[in-house]
Image 1 (cartoon, rainbow, N blue to C red):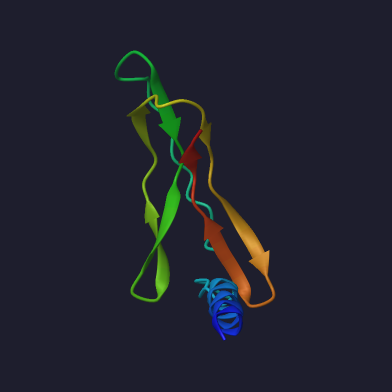
Image 2: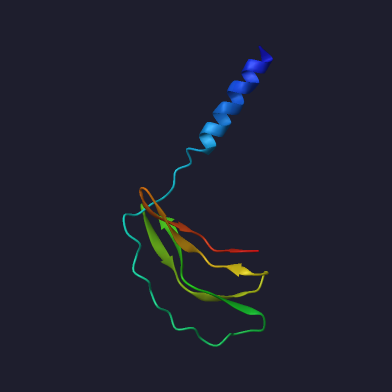
Length: 92
């Protein structure tokens, strides 16, 4: 009985992981061009515009300088069967 319970629990967990809601929009927002300024401090890394999900749509997180925390991997738009979703940038 314990084996069956464990198998059902595992199936439930794996099934829930595969059903994660992905925030999508039908078309990608137009690119916002931002002029890069001079770095304001040593080891500054330029982060291009990013996007975050807010109230049913993506909003721009403006480009800016950040202190280096490694290598910045820029975010990008991913095409899905339901539309486009933003894959956020991150430090590695």
